[in-house]
Image 1: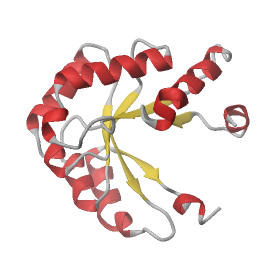
Image 2: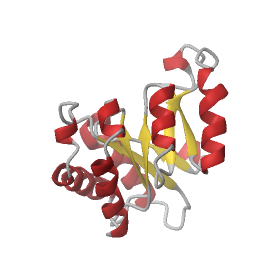
Image 3: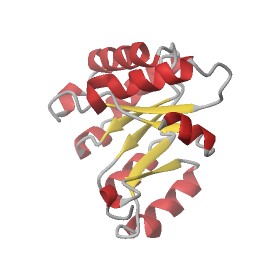
Image 4: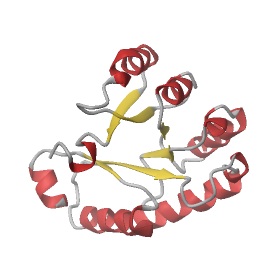
Length: 172
């Protein structure tokens, strides 16, 4: 699948530490290791391995989660790490984003973003100064983000990654 994707022009892979309990990250790393010089961008996600409470979005957990993903992906610096559908209180926490800024400064990750459930969460994440991307459900059945999220992201220079673009297979 990865080979066919690259042959079709795909240059970005989106994964998460919980996909196959890290196996997805490992498969991508194995594929990329066999393709030296292939220019790809890998986005991964963190945060779904713990109960969804603000206290679990700590620097200690961020370090453990990113270290595991760096090991799985065989890289020192992760291209993009997205908080994986965190609760709104996490998106509203200055401390969380200060910790993520620290990890960027340390070279653990090149950039970070937030994968969200709602338009309001997307807008709150976009308002954060260092958020590089927001991943939100956009497909033929879920067009609401086109009205408010895309213009706000464009204005802020934040990338948008479409979640569930095929409506969990319904549109395929």
